Length: 355
Image (cartoon, rainbow, N blue to C red):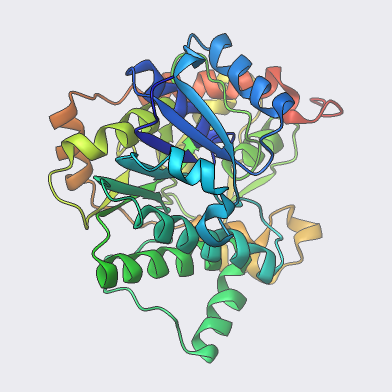
């Protein structure tokens, strides 16, 4: 088997597996670093790839842990991956209600571990790190933060978003200090495949769709101009795979989202009409929802920071996409297909039933 020239961290996650499929479809030999690299787990990954039309012959699976020194690779596996040119870090922990240390281990220590290991590859062309459209900032990154400032960050934003924010800054500071050829990709809410709707991820915006479908969304938090942009997972995977070749210089950050995403109120109305359920008529200010107990609102307080009227600068992402010949799929059909798939899969919970 040809030695891998690319590595995907987080290859069994939602974004990672579609990225892995895209790279293999391009004919690139790729390594997937898995915490559980048992034969059964590796076989499940290869089966998923084959079921989605991929050729797993170019896949190498090795055991490792992004939060460990040197990714926790054996000497043999580290040598095996000595020729990689591109390292894609799509690993991390995406869940609300995390404990602070649990979140930091995955999203800060893990991000730094991946970047440090990438820097040891002698022929490295690009390290691509997945951050997020609400956590990455255009400001000069600072890491580490003073203790009081860090405490406030975690208190206000919750462990998931705070750890992603801290991890984003940490990786960018390290890259600047060590000359790591880094590109940060900041995706918006990632929805299912543009053609099949397949996702397998049922939190965040998907949870709002679940509440809509089950009649548990009497009101919508936000304003008429609240903007929660989306991107399909297949477009994101193609974009990430294109970065090393079509992004001319490292050091940048690209916001990857569909600017044509309807405002949240209109998005919910679109899906309600498609699913044949009633859309909420009332909108409640985020500040009010934040002050109410979540047991009354049904809203996880950590998700409220994503309800904003902000818009995002996507010019650099558009330049990369144009250079690679990528075109975003139409957003409204993609949203409908995603919603259909969520319903068909009962939002990942067999007991979910529409009223």
